[in-house]
Every structure is written in structure tokens, then in C-alpha cells.
Image (cartoon, rainbow over all chains, first blue to last red; front, side, top):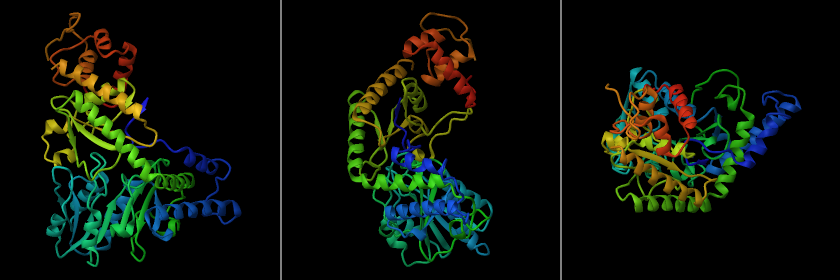
Amino acid sequence: MIYADNAATTRISDRAFEEMLPFLREQYGNASSQYSFGVKAKRAVEQARKQVAAAIGAEPSEITFTSGGSESNSWVLRCVAETYRNESIHIITSAIEHHSVLNACRALEQGGCVEVTFLPVDATGRVSLEDVKAAIKHNTKLVSIMLANNEIGTIQPINQIGAFLKGQEILFHTDAVQAVGHIPVDVDDLHVDFLTASAHKFNGAKGTGILYKRSGLNLSPLVFGGKQEHGIRAGTENIAGIVSAGFAIEESVSELAEEAKRLRSLVEVTVEGIKEKIPSVRVNGNTKFCLPGTVNLGFNGISGESLMHLLDLKGICVSTSSACTSGKDEPSHVLLALGLSEQQAKSAIRISYGRYNTADEAKVIVKAVCDAYAKMMDVL
Amino acid sequence: MGKKNCYVCGKEALSKNEIGLTKKLLDLESKKFYCLDCLAEYLEVDTEFLLTKVAEFKEQGCKEF
């Protein structure tokens, strides 16, 4: 099998796996227990907190572990809104956010008292700083823009937006789930108040999310219960997952520059190889400001979903954002936001390379895509 | 929907699964349809594998099957 869907999830790294294992078997203590067995678990969580903080230029006390990126995103949106529950407030986000942000915003809108502006993006998926500035209202309390898009890999000008918002009474959140571990991320450089990340996107285990919250800011709990995570996120800690997050992020960041260069070359081989046989192929997204291993390709006249299935028959995993699973074939909201037609949006696939992909695999993918394309064109 | 025949061998009245496979794997708007055997040959996989895919698509709730 060739797994080229690393934007969906990644294989856990050997190091992260080895480090987490003891916390599932021998050292299974509860980090809240006060005997030594529990203290060891607590120390492991705190070690991971330091590792995560160091990777994004934060202080350990600014890191909270959650169940995943969706929880972290929902937490910020819902609880910032909750802070202003007696006021009518305004939130700014973009049209191409992950559904955990978009749907949380829509839920807030439906609850009344919260107005949300969904900013447009340009043809490459970039939000403009000017649009952010123009959207600000007297009651804008939060701006939430993703650092890198999950479908097209486009990287947003978060540092510019953050610099503009700095000093204003507006909180700034970025969903950095696709970015952390893949491009340099520093919370001070980005000028963000909140940042979301998820361990399984950088070769950690599934089920562990991260929320960075700038020191001094208050955020009411989303999950109520015990006093875990500095009293703001209840629930027994997923020690093994958290440990995996610490080692995986440390590993990813230490190899980041070299790995980014390697992944960019895999993408280049893929795009150039496919273009040679299918000149009409289109790269959806920004080719300059983009994640190193992610590329979204549009093929005129064919179904991206069918192409994905044909590649699956050959043991190749890529993704399409327009999957017909229940008879309802919805085009990607991200691709539509770029200005693509419904048909163009449905003709796309995403290839996302990661740590375990090789140049030989990229060549196999090129051949498989070209072969599948020819077969699909033949039936039309 | 009218009955479909296999574009290659001429097998008549293709089953819902056969039509569904052609649509799902080649194109919803496909003008050519294949029986299970001919589709397997065209796609260079075995028929058992295609049947496994049918089961997966059904599990996912695809209404083409």
C-alpha cells in the first residue's frame, strides 16, 4: 500500500509509539492520583507539555491537552462567545476553514447574539489582510483563521493578520492542525492568542489535541468535571496519547527543514510527471505559500471520487473532498470558495505526502494516476 | 433507468451492483457499462476484489448499490 493521505492522518512514528507504550501497560496510573504511580504519569504529561511548548515557542503553562483539533477549535469559538453572552458580538473567520470551525460558527449564529463574517479567499485560497481589516466591526471579539488549509495546503498570512490585530481588543485564533510539525510555527511570530494542533497530524497518536492559550487570557471550560489541565479541561488525561504528542512534535520539528525540502521534491515529481501525460491538470491552491507535502489536483472532465477509487484499487490512498457516501455528492466548500465550478471542484483529488513516502512511491502514483485517467476518459 | 448491457461481452441486463461499480469507479455519467468480469479485466483487478469494494460502498451508505 502507498499511503499518500497524510493530511487526513499520519502513521505514528516509531519513537512516539515506543515512548507511549509503557503508559498503556506498565505505567497506566491516573495523573491525578497522589501516590507515586500517579505522579509518574503526571510527570510524563508535564514533560510532553514542555516538548509541545518548545516546538511552538510557547510556555508550558500555555499548553492544554484536549481530545483533538475539533475540540480545541470548538472550545475557543464557543467559550469566547460564552464570555460575551450578554452582548451582541461579531466573529470573523474564513470560508475555507475546517468544519470544526465553520460548524461551530454556524451553531453560534443560530443561537443568536453572534454574527459571523465568513471572509472570501482569492483564487489560490489566501485570505487578504485588507479583507480582515474591512470586516472589523465595533463589536468584533474574535478572528479565527486557519494557518494552513487541509484540502489545498495554502498557508495564510497569519503573522500579518496577527500583527494588525495586536493591541486591539480582538482575540486571534488560528487552527494550525495542518501546519504544526510541517512548517515553522511560533506563537509570538504569529501574534496569536489561541492556536490549535493535533498529534495525529504530525506522526503522534490519534485522540490528542493541543490548545495553546496565551498567558493571562481566560477561557471558560468546555468540558466540566475535575481539575485536570490547570482546572480548565476536565477528564482523565490520555497519558499515552499526550506522551506520543510530545515526542512526535519534538521529532517533527527537529527534522522540519530537511523533511520539507524532501516533501516538496515529491510534490514536484508528482505534478510534473502528471502534467507530462495530462497537460490539462490543474493545481488548486497557492504554489508559493503552501504546505510542503500537500497538493490538490484538478482533472477536467472526470470525477475525482472515481479517480480516488481507482487508485485505491491499486493500493494507493489519496483523498477527495467530494465523496458520495450517501447518495449526496457535495462539492468541496474550499474549492468552491476558490471560484471553481461545481464540476471542477468534483474533479479534484488531494495527494498529501508525509514522513514515510519515498520518491519511488511518487513515481508509482504518477503512473497510476495517468493510467486511471486514461481509463476514465475512455468511458465518457 | 433502462437496462444496461456490458460494453465488452454484451451480457444483458447488468445488475445494480455492476452498474453501480461502473458509475462509482469510472464515472457517474459513464456511457459504457461493464459486467463484473469485464470490469475486473479492464481495471486489472480480480472480481473478488471488486465484490469486496461493493460491500465497502454499501457499508458507507452509497445508494448506487
